[in-house]
Image (tube, rainbow, N blue to C red):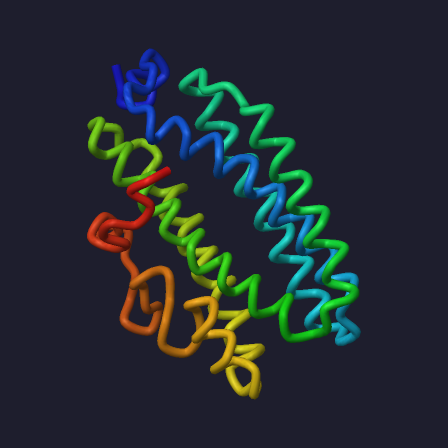
Length: 201
């Protein structure tokens, strides 16, 4: 029996991982909703195209997380679905009234943390001797990092960045993950990143 078939016969014996899956599934919907408003609020066609692609990435991530949840019979959380629906729709609407900088800044801040969610998810699966999902979890963490880099590049020269970085702990010098794509981010090294991230889920 191969590893994937073995996984199909297992239920996850990790309450933290189960909750992380539920939360990630619903949070991806909130992010997608937020990017709908963000894309609608910008005038630059290239920015609009890039943000719409990021929205598509978030819907794809939600679908991938749902596959994992179905595989291990993890139910969707109605509470998280409602909570993140409201959050996503409110953020989407706010993009039209808070100016250009803040949607880019807070999107980058959010994506910075999302990177570690998938790294941690992979580490928790591996702790259960489950490695069948390594590639998809790595790819999602990599994509979230690419999103973070995109948003940072858009605002890196803004006069507002130092103030927001000091206040909200993300920017030129502060990040919510320790991954540097220029230094390389390989699947075999994934579990060494994001030490201590999200210990309280």
